[in-house]
Length: 87
Image (cartoon, rainbow, N blue to C red; front, top):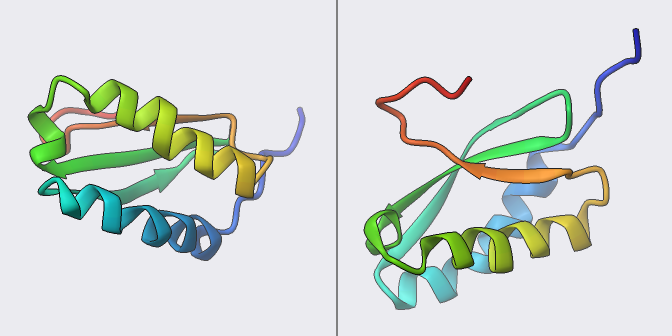
């Protein structure tokens, strides 16, 4: 069985920190929840981002794109709601 992908949590946090000013400008934020062994990064969209109709665009066109550019091992970014199971 193949070994899982190793993604540095600190590097993910650095990329998210660089995105936060734009999210906060619109009243939102993002929190790193987990990093899966398959290269999936799980985040929680908070504030205005959590219920915004543009949240999918923010997630895929903004957060995921930036993470993939900075960390090629990232395969996907998934938004989770912490009161529901991730898997």
